[in-house]
Image (cartoon, rainbow, N blue to C red):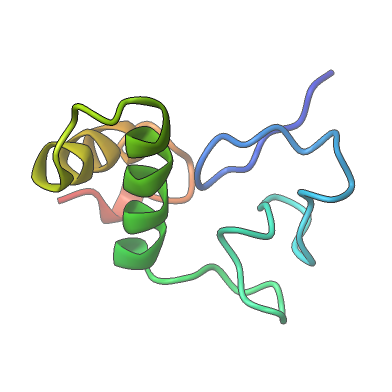
Length: 80
């Protein structure tokens, strides 16, 4: 069964992506494995979106990232 980051959905099969925390990738955690602040993860997802959809402006990318994060287990309870 595939494992995914509970914060951003990144596949965790690749050891280079897996962070120090069991349920999160290295992009969503600090060196200790603690989840980064929501805003920081949201910006990271927005940057990723803009990387493959350059026509999307920053405001749209942040809104899309926020919407996407509402379905992720790490952020369900903190959804705006």
